[in-house]
Length: 230
Image (cartoon, rainbow, N blue to C red):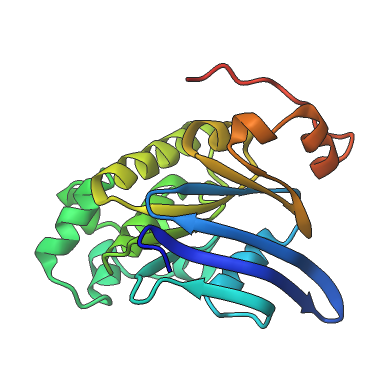
């Protein structure tokens, strides 16, 4: 595998309960990439992440660079949200040093007062930032995010994505991001995969996200707005 090639997916096909979820998907992930997976509900986006983590059966090839460290932030963790543990107790489960925990929590914007708070008292945005911090405790090189702003208001969404962009630069991270938000794709990604069971389009967002490709991806219910950022 090339030095900068972290992941190669070749002809990935997934069938669950006799239903075809993903068909003949191929792509690569290189060091420093931020790749967004864009598509409607039921397109196979979350299933793709679970296959990359080895959690679901599949046909085809998934090849990670040897020795690569991966962390995963799922879409929601309701059973953890209900825990009576404090944030400090929750992170103590990782059995890492207190200083390392503090450094990472500060990196995601939390101060000392936050450590004493109960997990079940956190706002959705705070809880998601806590999960991002948790994912960094293992010093990963690759982060997989499944719609990290689900259930968060618009202001909180911007905070989470700005945080991810900042962490990417600081930690030299490679990211694979499942999202439904075109703003995120344009602003933070250098590559997009439009997925609806099959690859509808793939490439740099401003080249491949045309009105025609978005219509093919979502059907007639999607309004298209040309972005002016950058």
